[in-house]
Image (tube, rainbow, N blue to C red; front, top):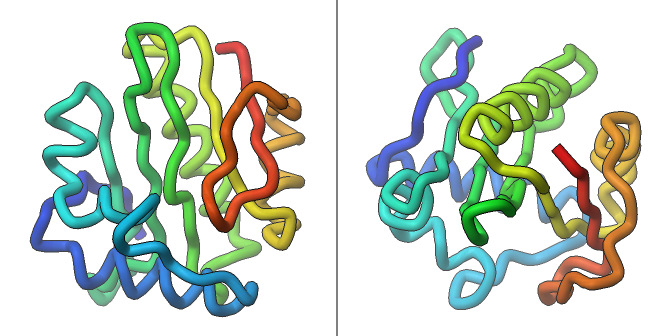
Length: 152
């Protein structure tokens, strides 16, 4: 398996991962709100100084996603870190998180924020293990009831 930069042509595969994981946890996508950024991953991520990567399995299928969204010159947001069930428990979530943290530091960001749902228990454990702490200052999106921040 390998991580590679996503292109706009990856949209269907990215949406498949997103919808599959959200449904698994009883959550819904918001195609006109928080998930509208997937309509143009290149423009919403890499063109703004961030990135959106996909995890590809040995058959070339997208099985995971992770994005670094630029909030401002010092703050970035971890977005859309999802991994299909059959690929969990193998260290890929940890590797994707380490990858995005390393890139954020290399790009000079001083703080990373994220929003998530309390239903994503495994993800929350992973974030907390890496030092993310509750962030009461952040506005929560429709499906997210938790916000976290990490000083880089």
